[in-house]
Image (cartoon, rainbow, N blue to C red; front, side):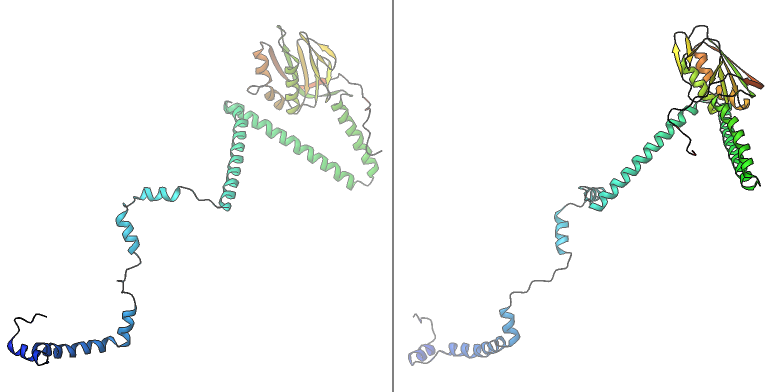
Length: 314
């Protein structure tokens, strides 16, 4: 070992086997510090701290989010709304509710469409025509109400009469006359109208006359006669060249209808917009309607015995 440059007293000490002064001083200076440090390391908390890993600085719960927010661009409100709506996420209950709502909406749409179609025929009518139609409906309602009151009166008479058998025979005879008028087996008279259809070109067909009969029945006609042929519930009309057959009886123009009923209801029913009179006039036919206090319907139909139907009271 090279000991050049050492002081003479140190070389003398080293030759005598003693430690140099500087070494002794360093050793004496270091021993107290190293001993204190060794004692502190032997403490339990210091020994546990050495065994545990190095502490990591505490970070808040929003640390990861803040890192992502710094790395990703900030989204606008519209972009966040689009991300929330698409792709859609549906549950089974939501799908069932959606199907029910769709079915309900479809049903409402169909109902509205049907109502609009039924009302379209009256949209082009004039105000006076609409008033006339409403009056006709009121009259029909009144007729039904009168009929109901008559039946209630008959029931009360049967219940209160002392001689119920005699009262029943009286009402039966009256009912027979009424049914005979409807069946065409007895003559009838009363207020009504006479409708005459002039057809010089032969354009009037059986279906047009049938529409006239149906319109008169709907307006309250109780007895109808066309050119000497009684019209009943089983009446049918067919075309026969330029003439018309009514229940197999050929009739020719002019066609004359004798109708018993309330004139104030019968005539307006024929003159409604798009009704019988306008349809016939489009075929260049001439239609005249006259009211009368006395119309006689004397054409009769033979009573027909039904082949299969029998009274349930027998």
